[in-house]
Image (cartoon, rainbow, N blue to C red; front, side, top):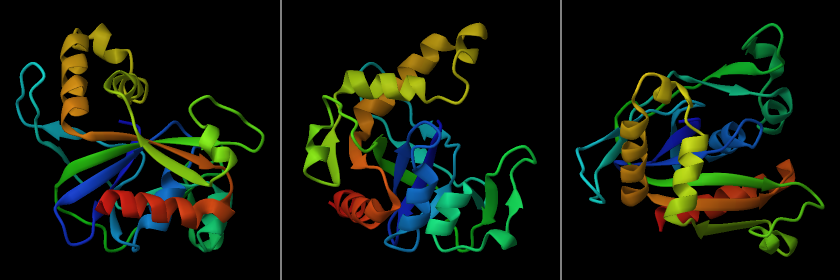
Length: 207
């Protein structure tokens, strides 16, 4: 999945942040790390599940990825890091790599997948009207909408169909939707809202 994962400190539980590029996954991950969470992986997330048939629930686990995050310069600056101590991901892009210390190295049970929906100033969306009066709202997603989001944010996309695994992929993601909490986070764009968004995710994850 095109997602980040963090573990809840002191537990065997994890959450995932799912969203397209430039939505704020890594910025939120860095802000949450050390504040009740430990980073597990950035940008790419593999989901491992126990066997399940039909609509039965399964256990979904996540494993740690490489020990670094990739941030755009503006996000790096907002996080308080020095751009001089980083390397570029690629010479043609301004995104940089930042090593992560103290990363959680154990597999964890995935409890919740948060789909990030950032609302720009002046933007109106039927499912985000609450943003007019608040910085952030977290609400459950319907299973059908959640499944579409998982399909749209899969790293390999149409490759599964070309190699004859589309049916298995669809069933596997259906099992995830039936076994993991799926929630949408509508939040206002802007680094000045970052602390509030992080705190709401933290409180929701700890339940």
